[in-house]
Amino acid sequence: MPGTGDNRKQAEIDYPAAIGEAGRAWLRSKPFANTPRESARLLIDFGYVLQLLDLRPGMSLCELGCGPGWMTRFAARHGVQAEGYDISPDMIAIARELAAEEGLDVHFEAADMEELDLGRRFDAGLLYDALHHSPRADLVLATAHRALKPGGRLLLAEPNWKHRFQGRDAAGEYGVTEIGYTPRRLKRLLREAGFTDVRRFHNTRKRLYSNSARDLAQHLAEPLVYRSLGPSAPLSLTRAATRPAGGAPAREFRAGRARPRGVAARPRPCRCGRSLRTRPTRTRRSS
Image (cartoon, rainbow, N blue to C red; front, side):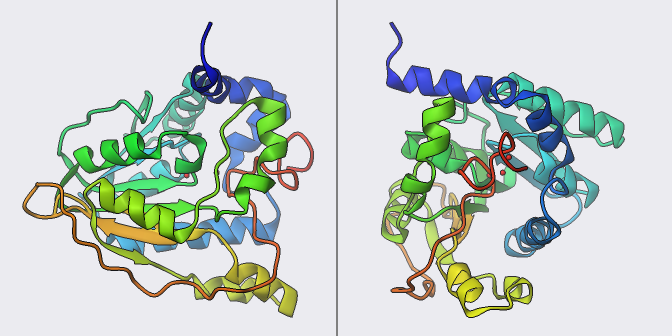
């Protein structure tokens, strides 16, 4: 009998089927499926992905936990040699279908991001709203580290620690993994995976879409975004890290400016939309 981890992996594989046709239609239309405000937020996020990873035409990018692949496809439109990996064959089928419709040369593959070995061939890596769907973040970050060339960057965008409570509804209904991270835990995980120059970023442009004190307070409690350097660079829209140029796992760590603390507000759910307020089966359904 499979253990809890195996069951949750199977739930991630089955997720597109579990959310029904309306949910799959929502996956196909991302990032334009939600409200105008949320669509604007997602598009701004993509702009930050380009900026923080310094993505330019001809560079190589791997996205782990790509889902329907909208970020991967947008990167390909920018001239990036992009590849996307997801544990769900149904997600990959959607991503391939949309890439073909758009005439894009993008490689999508169904694979477990905890077990991949992609070789040190990518300039940049992306984990956008994906890490919190794995119970083994250490294995996922090890995959990202192995995939990056010396000096490569990883961008990581994850919901904050309160997602452990926000995600209970989706975890209970679909059996999927929903984990919330504290800044300290993400830093430690990135450092232990061998990343250096870990920095946390605050997306101030999103304030354009907030017109109340409550919205601003909620924004300040939003997900973590990090960029770090690989074998001598990783990122979350709250943290970024870099792989050391020497190739050997580095133990040095430099934190950037953290978000304000002590803000009493409801944090946003993850961008994948599995929380109570954004699941596709109830209202509308990201990494």
